[in-house]
Length: 167
Length: 167
DNA sequence: GTTACTTTTCATTTATTACTGAAAATTCGA
DNA sequence: TCGAATTTTCAGTAATAAATGAAAAGTAAC
Image (cartoon, rainbow over all chains, first blue to last red; front, side, top):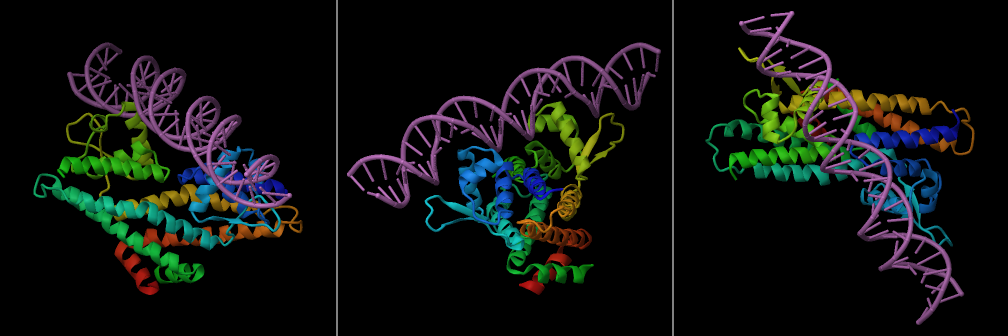
């Protein structure tokens, strides 16, 4: 396989994986393209390389910046905006964890706390319902702590230690 | 809030969370409904409770069984099939981890191994590309090991120990 | 082995999500 | 301050994913 083919396959596959994770295909593809671009590139470059419209590029770039995965950079003497992705994959992973925690886990905990406030706690079936909700809450809080730890820890240090203990 | 309202909200919210994770809304709702059902229920019960068609229920039930999250059960003297969900939330979580590992991580590792076989390893840009691919591979393998450990370990034992070490 | 009940399939329809492209807004150099 | 270059927005359209419902297949009681 040639380098250009491999790059293309990486971009396509990254897009497909993104879809499975509830991430829009194009956003994942733009991120992939930036990950394997050695130099900063413009919106026009992205439009051309992925054959997509300006509006599409623009919106997804905004989202990717919102996820903290890519950055605007200024190139000397250029009017256009350029973009780069953080190439440190561990940082990419922790950034995604951080964001998902904020966007999903926090609202989840809020929901669960709310569901525990039912009036008829003695009623038929309340006990079982509260049990499930309570268990999910407990698990979510554990996941929350685990994510905090992962965000703070460094890659090898973290995972190797964990594996060492439990394997 | 009344119990019935709380149950309804749980089902709806679970569906919404599912969507964010790339899981079809109805599938998540059926799982939620089964989680909070104290007794096994039939396809007709699910149709009625969620106001969805027979075909929809049937397909999603098949998927949920494929994920190992729900089970068929035989009820004495009943012709119809009944379904239940495993109520142990830690088991639910490990089952999901196990499946995602199989369905997503394994194909990912296969892809990455493939991408490393480029012909022109000395060419311009090859080094950077191989660096990114190699890093993702390393991270994926670490994630793979971590998931293995999580699947084997027990909830509190696992998470508490991890937190204790790194916090 | 016929019938009534139940489950499964899948072509068609509907709903959801994503994309386009042109117009509006913004930026910046002269 | 003007005007060209660039970015952003968003109504309309297209693509994708999910749901329906009726027909087919399967099951079991008699």
